[in-house]
Length: 195
Image (cartoon, rainbow, N blue to C red; front, top):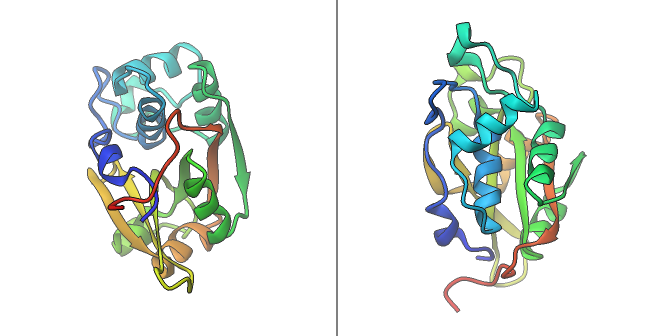
C-alpha cells in the first residue's frame, strides 16, 4: 500500500457540513481534503464561502440540497487560490493514476457514484456525477500490477475505502472520469505503509 491512507482518512467527512446547507459539494469537500493534506487549516464552510465569493461553484439558496457542485476546472482554481496549483486531465489510465499517488500528489477524481456505490438509482446516464479524493494505491507485492485504490468519499462519508481495479475502471475510466492533480507533491511524500 502506497500513500498515507490512514492519516488522510481523518481529513474526510460527509459533505453538507456548511452554514448554507449545500449538499452537492463533493468537489469542494475533496478540495478541502487535498488542502488539508498540504497543511492548510480549512473547513468545508471555509472552502464553500470562498467558492461562492469567487463564483466557483453552483449556488442557489432556494435549492440548497442540489447546490455546491463544481466543475473540475473550478476545483483546480480553488486549490490554486489557496496556493496549491493543480491541473485537470482526462483519459488517464490506472497506471497513470497510481503513479500520481506513488509520487505523492494530491488527487481528486470524477466518478459515477451509482457505479461506485453499486446503487442503480444513482447511475443516471452513466457519466461522472461525483468527486472523491484518492489517498492510496494497493500494489501486488509480487509485482503483477495494481490491486486497487483507497479513496475518501464525502458522499457516503467513508474514509480509506478500498476500491478494486475493476470497479474503479467502470466508475472512473468508463464513466469518462477526469483527474485533478496537484502540480507538486505533498510536503512529505507518500511512502509505503506498514514498512
